[in-house]
Image (cartoon, rainbow, N blue to C red; front, side, top):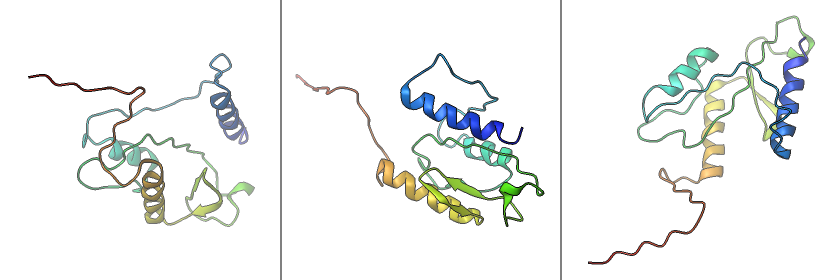
Length: 134
C-alpha cells in the first residue's frame, strides 16, 4: 500500500506528458483558489502543518504549485535517516530539504527561474494589436 501513491503519481506524470485524459487516475485532491491575499497559502500550510510558502506583499506565488503529500511512518525504510518531515523537488530529485526556510527559498528561486523576477506577467496565446483612434 505504501507504494501505491508514488506509483500513481508517476502514472499521472506520464499521462500529463502524453496528454491522456482517458486513463486518468483519481485521487483525493484539494485545490485552493482565491483572490490575491485571500489566505490560499495559509490554507495549504495549515494542511501540510509547516510554514514553507513564500510570503510578502503583492503577488508572491505567481504560478501554480503542485504539492504531493506522502505519509511515511517513522519505521518505514524510505524514511532513511530522516527523523522529521522533509521536502523534495522534481527539479532536484537527489536533494532532500529538512529546513523549511530553505524550502521557501527554493520555491522562490524556481518561481523566479520560471516566471522571471517581474511581479506582473501577461501570457497571451496570440498576438493582439491594440489600435486606438481618437
